[in-house]
Length: 61
Image 1: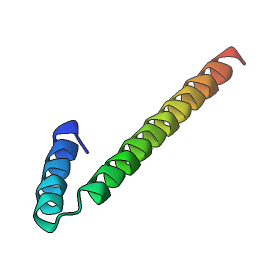
Image 2: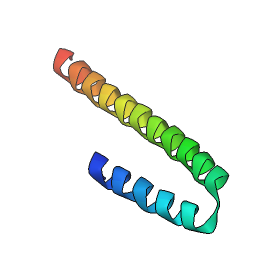
Image 3: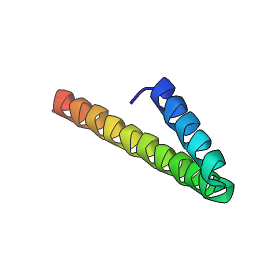
């Protein structure tokens, strides 16, 4: 998903939370989404590093 999709999703959640008076829930969901995004980015970096390392090892043999 692109960054704009996350922004759109956050705006929709913000509107719904304001209408339903659940601001704290919106803030907590924001923290969860930020944490999940950071975990996802870290896992992608690990996979990329592992793939580059495997290619390097195969070329060296």
